Image (cartoon, rainbow over all chains, first blue to last red; front, side, top):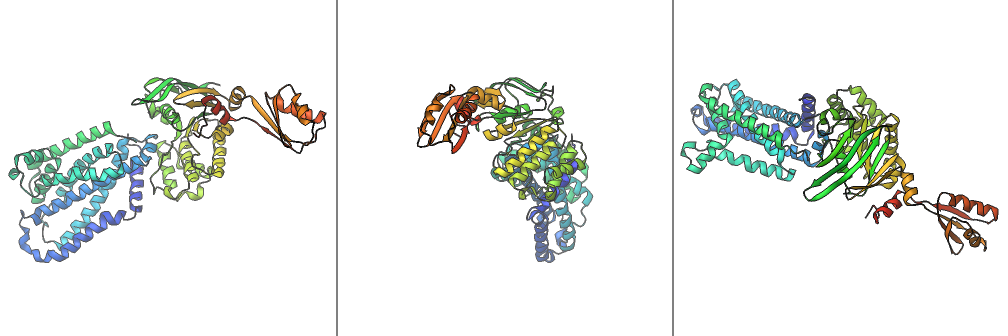
Length: 249
Length: 305
């Protein structure tokens, strides 16, 4: 089933790093921006910013994590559609490779890069931002992994059907970014108008935000089992659907 | 000779467009079989149905005794394919592709290295796919198609877009595949390629097979006309040639004489006539019909139209 997964993952990782701006765009620039902003505003925040409920204290790290996960999704969608348009998927199809092996390889590459970016940010953050030092990194990493897998599975679904590379990025963005607006990151879900409130309940990102923010604040996992279940459900439904509708060409 | 591919009554439509209609043929063990026809005739659709990449609406296909649709995974291990317009990742290295394919088919990487050697790609093993020339890409695709030591090799429009030199090099490689005892099924719209390479060809147009046979047999059957064009200033030459039983028309234009007729014996008889009558000839050539003419005869238009 997953024959060739590790070799394909390794090759795809190398191919990605050979892209002009591959590593620089994904890892170096976000971390650099983070550090520069940290140097500029970090000293002004002072110890009072430790307050667990401010946007800087909770919202920002969660937003950063989610944005990075979404950019991973968009990049996945784009790569798969380029492969489809260019006839690469077609050639891979006529081998014992299965669609999920190909998608999984790309997901692992994205997770590795996301992990590298976030780890560097955490290291930089410890130095420049006087917040979140109390955060449970292992717990937050697990929460982030669960959220990212779930968000990536939506990417699977988009990647399986989006026809051309030209559409991949905008379609992905149109689907992903509005989710942030209703996810409860900027306004509490309870305060949203009824229609947006309904949207918030459906949108998987809401559960990712709830889980990430909760774990960042130090909530026990037992308080977020519902979020984990929702994210798992999204993952399994989207993964199963994408296998059904996967288009090779 | 027993058939390794059997296709009977295959039909495939895309919406209201019938791509392949009632196609039936067999490919024998160890031969190079060509499906020839213009672009859009249904060559690739037929081939991809046989490879298990598409499902026909109707009809039966058997490859090495397997059903390409139901047994697609089993079949993949026993066939090798080169697809039209396929690509690899731009920045994948030649050896990485070979290495991945070898692993996917459970082969040793050394088998792949040997193939690179044989296909003249050994010095390109560290090159990115995007930097290869058209001919090198096609040779890499042939290497990938051969890596699992397949019993049947499918080659779809293998030399399209290549210059004549690269094309000839690829033809030699394909003959080499047959010499290793493998069956080759190829499609082409190049009549010269079919004539030089194929043991048997099927002519397909508008999704239907018009005729199947050895290229020479097709020519003999459909285009038995032969012409001899020669130059002679002997004033009695034309008269002598008219006496040849097989010569149907003899036309003169200045010193050039064209003798048209049917059957293999025409050329011999013209030569005998020249020799017996001691006609002084300053130029001599024959015009023999080829597959191109057969195609024109059968379809009423040239394959390039």
